[in-house]
Length: 507
Image (cartoon, rainbow, N blue to C red; front, side):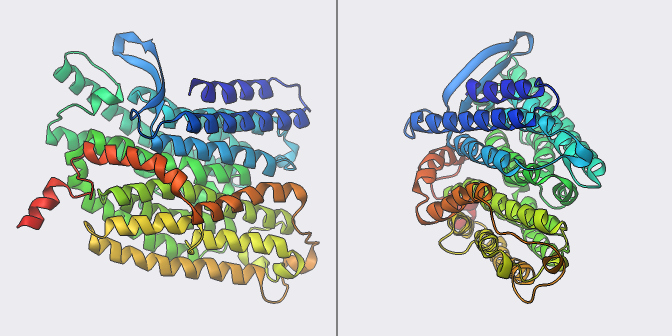
């Protein structure tokens, strides 16, 4: 795990140290380093024993001994699949950004350096098994994304970058208060303060204290997720981010929030999680409907993608707070599949914008006549986003609904409305941009079809969409044991029935 952080961190520093004007060398180094991280993620998956210890491939070095802080890393199945997602998406983003030029002639060398630093921080946040170390990575990954948006984004990039940074920083500071609270509680119960996750999840925290500590973590994760009504930073950030940055923003960074729910909120604060679950589920379902309706009304392609993501994150939260093994497994699988399907959708939007020079939906029409392969990729990405059977998202969405219905039937039924709305907003955008008579910029500008480099970007993602749609078992085998362990932490049986719901059923 340490190598997966060190390699991109050193690679980013090496790219930053290149002389000015060495953009070509920066791209080559970034691609080589990100490819090596993918290889390390695959090797970690091969070495991972699904029947072994909960956390494997561990590393622990004393960092701040006076406060019991260790540089502790390790992965369970949930973290491992997220590292695989990072390993796949970062090389794709590097290749997709190969021909990009910075605003006002800005050198792209810094862009690729920040991408590698961001990759190191993302690996760290998923691999950390010390809560304080997790907080450090949680906050540190804001810095590279701030510069990616603020230096290489659209016309309102500075506003979007600042909004992204302030929202996330505020959430992180609230979480820091809860992290300190956990340390104080551990010192009281154990006689020695600790931030080690395994030790903290064994604590018997007073239910009232749990609620306060839970809320600190929840606010930070809800902002990052983004869960309605904490979502308002995402449409601006996604719309102004460069395409590569947008892919990682909606494909990986957002998952830190939902990862935090299932990794930290549920095991550390089980009583508080059950207490607040109905409210959180209400927000999740509201986000599904709200995001879908707003997606249908968008005039900007990039903002359209961000609102579809808000809707999808409602399904992920529904699966997590249903407290069932099927719901939790579906939610984690949805995190991976959403990263793939939304990643390719964002890339297809970027390829469209690079040809037309506009992000407005109304400026396109009849693209399929001039660029049929691009239109086909856009359609596949859209079908994966609406969870068509046979695509990767269908399996995860089905598991979420299957797992949430036994314990949360009302929320599940309302959430299914989002499936219908997803078909509407995706097919409407496909019809308006790809079909009908050629209009807008499609008439005025040359519209070449996908080039070989662009095909190299989208073909692997399409293969994953179809492959995981047909055979998701390799990922499920990694995820299932970790989710089962989490359900045990919160007092759920294998069917996901909590003690509280079991008592209600008996009555």
